[in-house]
Image (tube, rainbow, N blue to C red; front, side, top):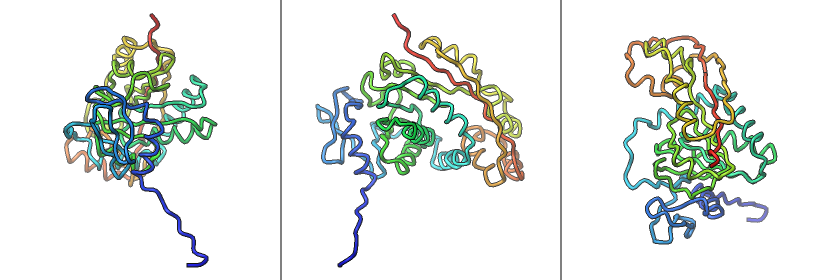
Length: 299
């Protein structure tokens, strides 16, 4: 029809496949460790023929079998909602600032190990590109498929993987920065994946992290010891900087159920205490973390 303009929108699968085709050298087969390439904008295939489909949401599942996990869709949805409320914004800004400070390359390769639903990585990619790092590519990896599926649905131009951190589908020495935010770390894999001049940036919980939830649910008043986590970090990486960060946010009534649901804290809590907490009009909630920045030890 004359005068009509038809716009063809690419699907998430196509957007993801195009990005993976450009950056295929970042991948290696998790079965045989050989290089991979994209075929027909539908699969990642290795030299020995092992293949992994690109899902319609825009991610690749590299797990040979489904992983049992209590981290379900509702948890990641709640985490995303709390993140959108800017509860984690001071953390994301500080992490972005440190990346910009420690690495001056215009084309950064950034990996988020334990990316969850992807809100931290997406925020930082936007901030880095706004700071002139237009060539930055972000890769998110998590064993929980529901989180990665949500991340890919929202940001298909990033590279999203469902995979085991102990056997990741990523090539040796491919990354300038590895992020690990409030999740377990496989330090041997971080060594393998990080460039020799790269940085590992890990956020560990402080003693007061989410203390109001812990108190209301009658759980341990303190998070796992940040001192022990820092010692483990030093065993594998040379500590360049340790930055404490503490902030407090007032959550309104609508956000409180999501704050409860976004962590495993409620899994073994008394249902009556959860109900009492959900009935509050507001909640002051503390974020208390330490950011550890490290490099490989030089021999």
